[in-house]
Length: 149
Length: 360
Image (cartoon, rainbow over all chains, first blue to last red; front, side, top):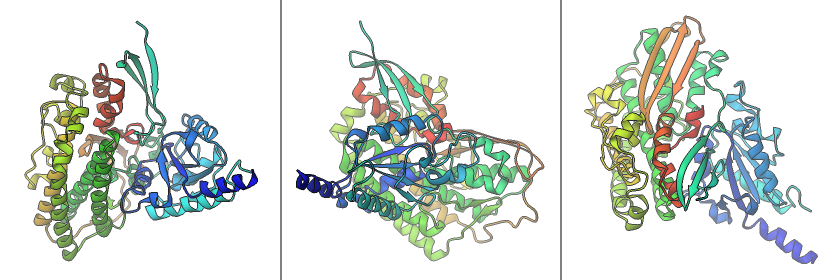
């Protein structure tokens, strides 16, 4: 049984399924995240599949700041993901609020609501940086991830 | 007969952005659609109280990352008009050049997302592959891929040299050739036609009454394009709006595809008429605009309106932004009743919704 578990842990990092949620970004990061899926950058070579269902996802990729209305949605999506899971926050505003820091409807970074494993800075970060962040997240997933054993 | 209420969004595979539609369904047909907004609202208009005018350019660029160049262009034109200055002719043409490159990348992005939402994944990959080459042109001439951040009060930050511009012109020709090769796959493909022809019809009268703008209005036969007002250098480029009359999702697809080609042509002509000279006025003191003004420009999604009010301070008193998706949402709600549930994503995407613009 333990051997099977180790096998699943190893294989999970080889084909992680990714969920993307935009919680209030300017789209700059979102289109760079989508650009990662396209022929020039092609994250599918790492076995990464982008999908829309949190119940199947290993890795949550978020962009943008949190506001009082979408923090519930974000927390809900995170709670629906099965453990082990990894969260990658993309973009300056997802890290600290960035350029929107002083705006009245901005709570701040993603880590005010859910725990974050990898921070990708930049406004917006280049696709290479996002891929790098996701690959770092995969190493954490291979090491057990959050809520894992 | 019983009704079923189905939530669509805020997190949905075809939507890159959170919007929530509450769909009332009877026998797989939409009876009523109610939108719920506010998932992306940040309160950027109020940020004028904390940022001075040059800093505010960085903020308006981040109203929407897809059309950041055009937001900054509109804001800078307004402030320049309040200050009574005008950007040098070379800067005016360069602004048109970058705006049109931005429009091309935005339309290619939408064409890709639309193909993806029809389940036509290879076409999505093709459009995004071509889009990367447009981004390369932008990055080589401005220094950034997405948020190009090239506008300043009184001109532009960068000045591409002749060799770069010749390369841009040559690259534009090659991109146009590739796009023309994709044309039959987009417009004549039987699967695409069955999913889009007659879906989400908006008549000319409806479009007019509901105040639709941009490609959504032009697909319903309203020949209205803010570039006809000849702001910046559009007056010297003999611009013609692209119009279709069917008003369905396929007409909106045709308008955007033809506009992409038209924008590539505008880039080519802008390079041809580019005058020599300065690209940026030297301002003696920090800008302190006085008075109020309304500026309108054409964004990839339609008419963008900025209202600026200043009282001679280094910070503006008020910025009001009216974005095209906000104007197109009533039209979307008029298109949805009668549509089958499986076509809701197609019709929603056909107005090219930009939620981060709408909610700011």
